[in-house]
Length: 199
Image 1 (cartoon, rainbow, N blue to C red):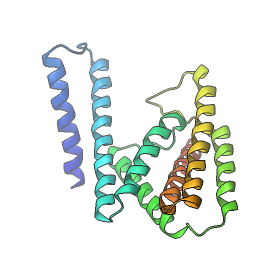
Image 2 (cartoon, one colour):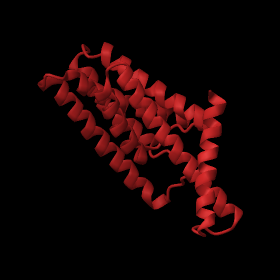
Image 3 (cartoon, one colour):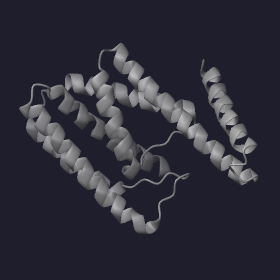
């Protein structure tokens, strides 16, 4: 099954590249070809991630969790960066495991006292100030943009966490607030893992 998925990504990306070549939509150089093919492969792998998380959400009757997770994870990771798997398969596994941890944490940690979640927000600010943004070798960040990304990650992460706290403590759906907070925690863990991996 794993080999089939890898072959499918390669087949679909090659199909798209043949279309681009046929209509001369890209330059006929190897560097240009490799650049576009990588971009298409990443897009296909990302769509597979979406489908996997949605499928898990449907199977365990937690579709709202999957929506919350994907919305925050995809949008915030654009500015924080974080761990990037070396293969598409590992990327898919990492995404599914991250979502599974969010679901598990949401289920068992809701009864923690309020001050723990306030500490979480303060730790998030510290992590993002010290470690973000994490550069992906395939998507380098211009030095002048780093401070903007850092400030944006702190502000947006704190804002989202605060919304999670409000939902937890003042609505009939505290589990959704906990899901928001767990997603931020996972993003921060992946930032830390990425920096440890870099040494």
